[in-house]
Length: 54
Image (cartoon, one colour):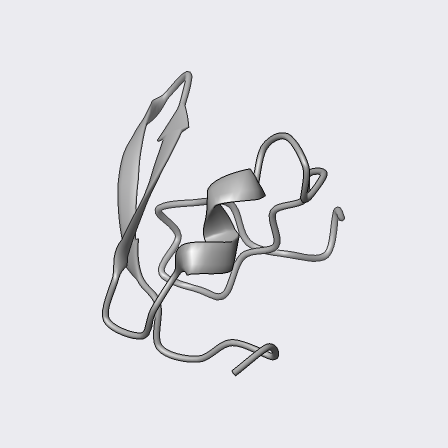
């Protein structure tokens, strides 16, 4: 989505992927967990603060 920020810009980002491949482990995610996003231009850590599936 062109309108969203890129990782590292200090804004909310949007990432996408299939729940049975890229995000298959997210079913176990809990608040406070750290999500590491590896991009060709760097690594970014995000803390899970809220989910829609709680």
